[in-house]
Length: 134
Length: 170
Image 1 (tube, rainbow over the protein chains, first blue to last red):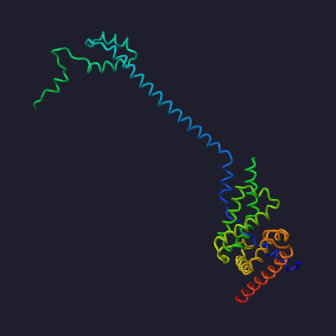
Image 2: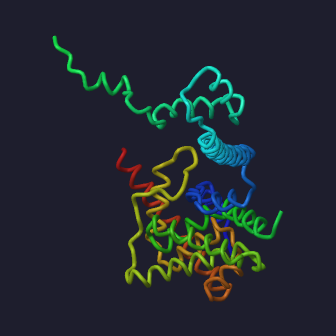
Image 3: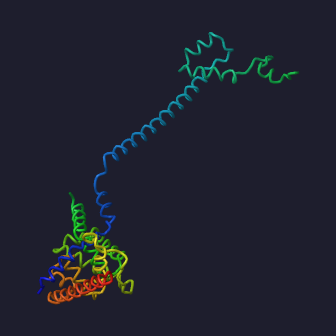
């Protein structure tokens, strides 16, 4: 049986509130992890996927261009005229080449690959051999 | 809201409602604030994993049982009884009565373990003597008797300390 003094003392004790414990980390972390991620995270994920896709497409298309250029060059190689380059032959060559770039490339490399007629020398070769006297 | 979400939300509510009293109870048994905190966390982490709290009829009493078991198991592992930690506060005192808080903590520390348990469970845990009896495995009369003795001792100890302080100030 409690006396009035006991009840009074009990009421006095209850004025002292126990200090709350530190939060359990898993309670907050676990709870939030079960929620769907915020919109920003979804948007970032979508943007990352799009950028990755764009980069992959870009790499693939550039490979195709390179391989096309190579095949154009191969085709052009077959049509390289053996006679010396004249305006007429250049026009004809441009008209028949698959692309302007391929034609120009072939014409540029043609001079290196085509042999010089007998008894004639390349000006570059002669100049490179000449000793300049100062 | 899924079942797991509801369980986590329930446990979070229980932690907010009873966490402070559970920590005080664990501190009163173990004597060490840090160990008490670990025991309370351990109980709630297990509750989240197993979902056992949702099956309990009296959730509050069940949590006190779990905390008591956790502390006592830890004490067994440690193999020694810890003296009460006097450095860390257990209560937020009314009107910034920090001397009163220290006096209460000291007086609680002077009580025998079984009386301290009952006082904490009844005053701050707000458990009935019947619930305390179930928790401690004693009869309701024994729980009530322990409480009366504990309350009288606590009051005597706190008054004696307050009187000695008042005398020293004169």
